[in-house]
Image (tube, rainbow over all chains, first blue to last red; front, top):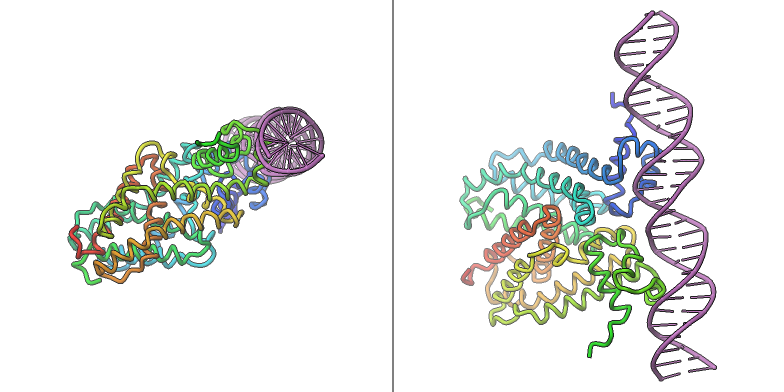
Length: 201
Length: 201
DNA sequence: CATTAGATACCAACCGGTTGGTATGTTAGT
DNA sequence: ACTAACATACCAACCGGTTGGTATCTAATG
């Protein structure tokens, strides 16, 4: 029985939606309350400040996207390098439809808050890092199974994936078109193919 | 003789500085005026709206960074692929010191405004695109001189460079440390080396 | 079992300060 | 005399946050 969504959860979902579209600063507490159908009193009952809501939304994002990726089918292949490639192809294929639907709450937020809200920046960093870490074991296994043409470190490559994905989002927003982003993901996939030549491309 | 910096230019420089640090929305017109040492009257004499200032700042950014890259030493090598590599190494080496000093006005702004200020988004897109275009001729010459192991298109690769650079900025801000960004640039350089094996790496 | 105390969840109204923007000067150059 | 380039003073709307209050639940008490 999905208990009647609490004001807290409703606000967190509204935060992810609205902040991805308009940014953290441009999204007012009133906007969030209106979108969530609750009052300001409820907002400040659950969150001491707007920044705290931002941090909670980053954790919420970690949970929801974490569950989504944990259940995703790219884990199926027996070959670790195939799993890595399946991950990247999935990330590319996800870049479709209206931009606000697939872009990242974290990248949007961290660009705004990094100079003014260190706690929020830290929450975004942790969330990105935790997602990158879920890739490390597959990348590491791929490195051991198919020696790369140049020495690479699994953690560093996982972060590079995130950098390209975040950069692809920036370009997709600038062009107002996900095609540019997908093209960049294709270059990233090509990079992986070139790094691990032992496996059939 | 550098004419006594007009209020307009002073405001544009202040905009680039402040907006890179705090974002477009979080930077108020009063902040800009204070930082530029002019009054609000002067602001709205030169710019009809705050958004117009943002657009003018994007053009200003195009001009100043355009001149900077045009004069940069990476154009020196006779070999076009060496010029491309020198460009990437320069972009990597620029990622040093305090973050606000080397991050990009455009990437920061476009993430915030893409849903609410199409004209500003468009100005950012044009600026990124125009910078990418300056790389196309070198990349194109490199492709013809050193056939890449897989077919690549110069314009697409130039945009991929920008995606990685923008993504590196996002990670640098999240980690509050440019090291992550430089590591990502090293992966991009490795990608170029692998794409053009005919030339000595 | 009924009563009550305390916590939790939420709401409507409000607060001082700040926001982008305007209306009306003033000053210097031509 | 006319205009471009500023400055001063001001405004309505909105900002994040606070207030005092109510409805609803749980847990202990008699």
